[in-house]
Image 1: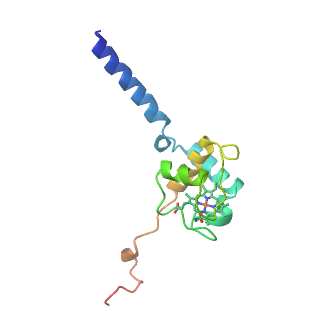
Image 2: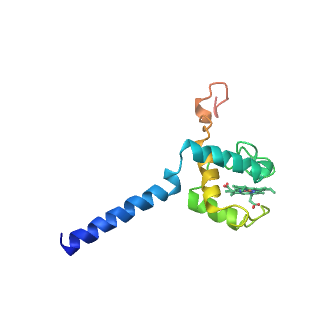
Length: 121
Ligand code: HEC
């Protein structure tokens, strides 16, 4: 195997293992279950509601932020939300919380609900 081929194989192997570690691939039922437990245990539900529907804090499940932005906000919020450092909530647990929120069913589009009045009707 020449050096180029060896480098390409190594790059592919590294890419494949990184892909396995990204939160998008962590969406096993175990991750979702653990995320649900942390969402309750660590108090997210107190402000965001038990299914992230909102309360004192905004709804966070429907237009869920991509993981990087989500994690960035939780670590360093800019408003009234208290910060959750890694000492309080590990990256793994935060990733599980994201998987839990992502697993929740999305509400139907307003247009698809026949009983809702439509603009102009
Ligand atoms: C004491 C109330 C409170 C708790 C507890 C809390 N939040 Fe928040 N959160 C807020 C408020 C209020 C905002 C709106 C922005 C602000 O004022 O910081 C917010 C905003 C956010 C946002 C960004 C807004 C968006 O649309 O996505 C995310 C993500 C978030 N919270 C996730 C979490 C997670 C995850 C937890 C648990 C680890 C949590 N929050 C715990 C009050 C809270």
